[in-house]
Length: 560
Image (cartoon, rainbow, N blue to C red):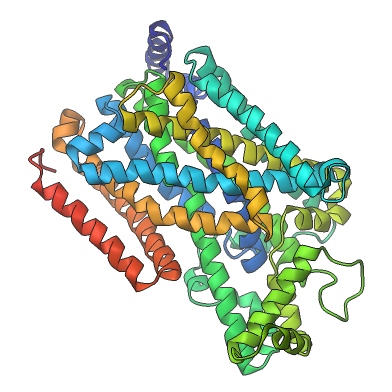
């Protein structure tokens, strides 16, 4: 599944000539030859990033605009290390980890990547289905459309399968298939960014819609949101009683932390670390392409990601943060809210009652919830989980129906389709690698179908479709350190890298940056495990790390 020899030799010749002509010519050549970074961008600009941005803005306003760019930059550091090792050695990453670090880490990395693909595919189908049913074709495929809810989901999911399987299997043909695949994804990523950038531009042109001073301040890191609800909730928390304040503060903080973990995990996931090395090798790149690879990651990933996710956070923060969903509080006027919003709102109020009166029956909790003060009800209406339809509906008075529904809906569907295709691509790589086969032909095509399990998402998930991306991303965060630790060790493996091992100041910089990225991922992993499983989960994770260390030091490989 490599490019033809003449293609690779031609690319090398272009790079050498460009270096001789100066930085300007080299930059133009880098832009022309870029590709793997755009594959990564198509994956990271998926439903997980969109949902994380939506809930970051809803829960914390502009205060967490800094989080996704920081997580992406740290992720690019580790992806840069992966590209450096792969291009310096020409060795498949899975084999390199098994031979030079630990088979335990190598197999854990492959299995975790495949699991992440299968889990992360669930919200992609759900988000695409939601956008088509609610934003793009509600009269035809919506719950009340001609096909009915179930029929609409079947039609949409069938179309998604047909499109994504077709374009993913093109990659397995190599040569022109690879180029067509990557070119298509570049167009999709560009359209996604333009869609969400256009929404913010329209909002900016609407008088009083955005406070750009507050927006820009949100790019300054503020770690207080790890320990406390966003400061903008203070007046609303002070309006409720002490017992209610404790419950709502804990609820807001827990949701904030989950969404922060989700946003960090979707910036660079463990499956992305598996994709990069193989997409580089499939193009026939070697150590001469290391500079191009770093440029490709920095531009093809960071810039589209920064623009698209920031625009989603800005839009959701301006429309939802500390604003009760319309029609939920009893005294509010207006049209009846969607059934899912009502169910989520009532569920939050029942949780509030159960926190202090766990002995009450469900019916008694419902009656008690109805008697809660307005301040409690307003907080519940602020925290209820919205989705793309709610955001699009709220934007309509500012941006008009075209931008609010059609453009936003196209952006959501584009994100989901590109991510599904890449998840299938990675699954094919992983399965072939575990079987010791070249990633092409029947084995690749059948392996890519592992990610098709996501088609079940729209049929089994009943809550807000966007929220499904949050728990799946928390799961992904728990796996990420496996990859980061593996490549941290590889980057310092003298026997593997030989004369390509970074030395002096370069080695210090690499290790400091990789330590920051690995520490960030490990802290996120620890919280993800502790919040879901508790102490037994942390003990199991520590046991795995201990086993990996023992495997590492029992091997007779080179020194670090």
